[in-house]
Length: 171
Image 1 (tube, one colour):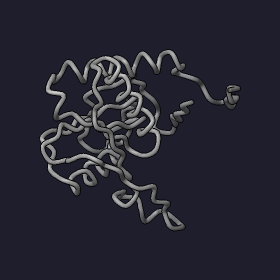
Image 2 (tube, one colour):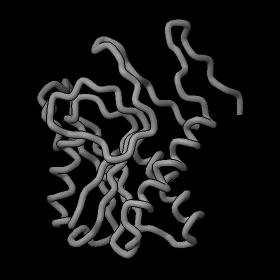
Image 3 (cartoon, one colour):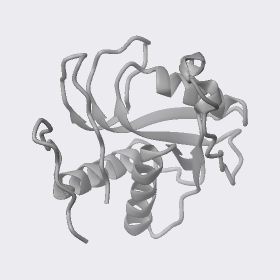
Image 4 (cartoon, helix red, strand yellow):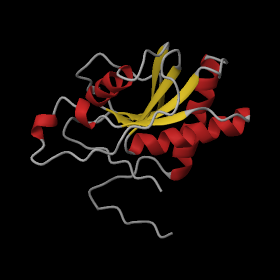
């Protein structure tokens, strides 16, 4: 498949190999923190977080030869900026085919910025049960938190200016 061209004012900061290494490292760190894999579940925040979460789940399966439960969460209705939408927001659905209560949830998103997306994701998860532990993994942490939220597992810390954007494009 041909690579899409990147606009001139954009700068590539992670190539596919670096992303793959970051996902491997995050996966190993998740396993090192708690070897009780019976409680572990990976949950991706729609949409890019879902793709990264699936890759983490696949890497853990490759390492441990087990299938870790996987789910996705749609935070659309939990956002604190929902009133900014001019039209009806598009709901993509939540799919959590395992018990949340008692689980060790590793929530995955692409970029951690203000913390508001993760706050919404936490609210959504809690509506489905009471996990024993919720951890956060992100591919990129760019700083500028507005809420007291931090990632437990980070692929790359990438300090930015507030007016800059990070766009994640995964093949």
